[in-house]
Length: 105
Image (cartoon, rainbow, N blue to C red; front, side):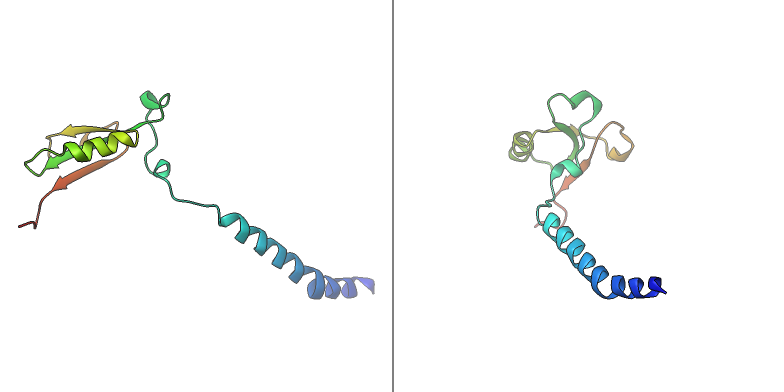
């Protein structure tokens, strides 16, 4: 019959070539991938227009962190300071940071 010979031809010649082509295409397209903050900080509904996002910060250092806050604002991240220790219960934030000096001499 003709079918088994076509199957052998496909399995020996066409399939490996096709798999190599697909592998090369996937490898070539993956070189352009990069990790960006937009994957982690998605703007809330109120900030969609200006493409910024808010970040809740608990400053537990006892000193001002103005340089850190200015660096966040330069990246279109709106820092909001809280003094509540249980800041995980506060809604409407894309992320939260606790800044502390634990273990520092």
